[in-house]
Length: 160
Length: 152
Image 1 (cartoon, one colour):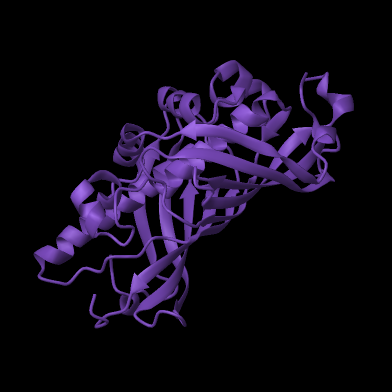
Image 2: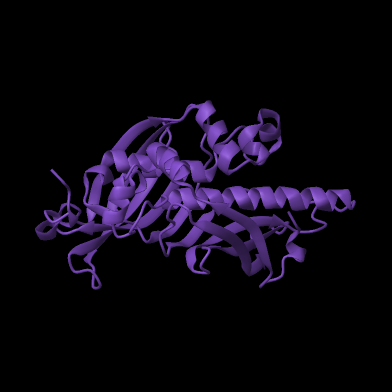
């Protein structure tokens, strides 16, 4: 990942997109969220979602997958240019996660993140604390998913 | 019997689990959804800030969802959740952990937009066998009221 100094507020990054198939929606749901509207087309149609809907945790996990793969790809490109690559710290968590609209079987969701705040850590001066607003948007351009992720990002020249 | 909004007054709800998390499950989840070396590779994990193989935080959250399903959501007239107010990762999930989940109802209120439902906000804390808190989340769930549950 980039260093804290290279993360301006407002900076936007696309992570990539993913199509949620009925099979994958049901596979995730069977293991982690077997509510009936995540397992059956008919139950989904009868629910508030109006169709077979992905578990919100499945949507979040796919966002993480694309974020990690995009970060790893950018790191390889930076290393190929001879640039130093930062290693982030473990995330302390997130806030304001919203499942705004259902993700239904066949939907393609494009994920992206915008830097919302960036500040130096008071207790650990070699780190910055960055808040990312990560979002998912469906093929109709509707915002379906959003959360505010919190990350520790090393500062340049802090011995990282 | 199906649990409805009225079954979730504010206060402690219960402790659920234990749920065993294997190394294989940690590796499988990470390979698909969070392929960072600290979740996939023992040597890289030893060098990481978490000092040893750890499960993805999203895996831990997903296991907490399943524990809530097995504990009470699976028997409740749940219509889904609008989101998660806050989630904090406090300590790493480790291979072989036996998780328990302490759940309380933080708030229960009637929905203005859907009067046949209420919104119950749960606070859930996942702990390992030593009682150490690994993750805390606060999340609302939409649950049908009793007088309307028979219509589902």
